Image (cartoon, rainbow, N blue to C red):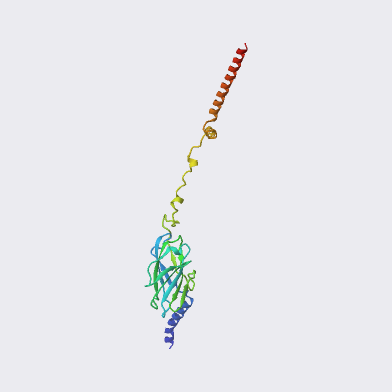
Length: 238
């Protein structure tokens, strides 16, 4: 009997050790997995695949709602592939893919295409999956050691020369430099020319100099007439 007890001691010790491991083990890994062959910061038109594990043996998954990480706009996400009959709709903070329930116990696998990944080291995708019977699994914790961690996509550093996609190009009228105004392109008139123009406009088309000459001529003629009349009068008196 002592030998039998001694033989059992290693087995008992192993069982105790195994129990201790189970009791001290951390929470299970995320039940929604995410991966991409182009997981690189600032990469464009990237397909991201998700695998939402089924937690129910009696009901199938009917809907998966995702809150997008900072740097990805809902409008920049398009549906890739997924369960038959499923479709994507955009939300304020992410998107929802849903359709007929997949078979109970079967994972819901789908993919989306993102216009451009942000310049980050990792991207968390908070996920809420719903089953046909109303059961809901929430994989939304950002702590990877939490009980319900969100799936996280780790990114490689951006490629050399990669830059964020800019905003839409401005219209031609906005992008083209303003054309010089007529005021800027027309040579400024000299003061003398402006004066002559003003005098011409104000005196029926004749300049001030022309009028001065006419007046002087009239005065000369008048003086000559007066001189002639006086001289003629003096001669008559003699």
